[in-house]
Image (cartoon, helix red, strand yellow):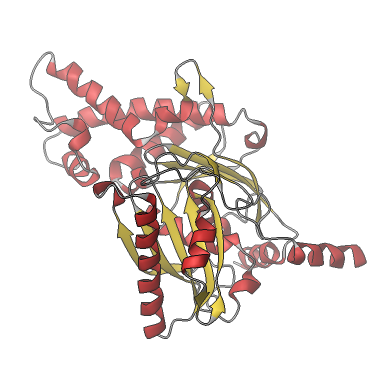
Length: 371
């Protein structure tokens, strides 16, 4: 009994650091794996543009002997909605062509997953949550489902589950798992930030702990998005805009009597050091060197927003794929080892092991068993 009590005390007293491997509900076994072969990074075979490249190849092959079923629009200019509309149309030729690209993409994605599962931490993976913008489309969801069938045909039992929340929301909601629940006690929400190579998103994540203590009912109450890629700003300008977005949302929350905790959770590309610096992988972030030893985003935000609701601000940052995966913690309590792959500009990845000895996990598991 004494040993168990000591372990719980140690967990509560453990330092909270950026890019941590040990979080309240999970251990992060690895993330941002960069697996190469002779052709480069294998994740590049399963990103969003990889699907469009395959669709473009199908169009070129068909066009050699007739008209292009998709018309004159360049493949990479199609939006997800436009491709979904073509796929669902009355003319069966465009969906037949798109199905060829789906099958080619799924074959490649299946191979990428099988390669990941050769890595030590991935060998026992029971479920992989699929996130990112690609899964938002009907075509993307179908490609992921086709990948699942190909894996089963190869005798691989690992389940693929599509993250149900919109990818924009999942990248914010996961921030609630970056810190112990006691830090949010007595508050209704937290501020969350998702920084990417094209957009910066900020949001107020409503905790809704009175409905479910495990954050399974957490939702984005209000959010804002800035497409910085259209403005090509300097790094300093980007931080100023981010601060403005956060302060505007906090003011809206205060006006609505929604009390945010004095914490800001940040999702950011790359390898995150314990001091909050970006070791590598931040090359696509706007307007300058975010990996510089002279720049620290959490410190910059703490200085710009020293208090929220009259309390000192606490800022915590982790990798963006990790945070999107963390949005699924409440729904992964029936497995022990699981992962996330996010299909977007690249293929983000992270692997998790649940921590069954934490109070959070025990309560969640008990609730699941009662159901």
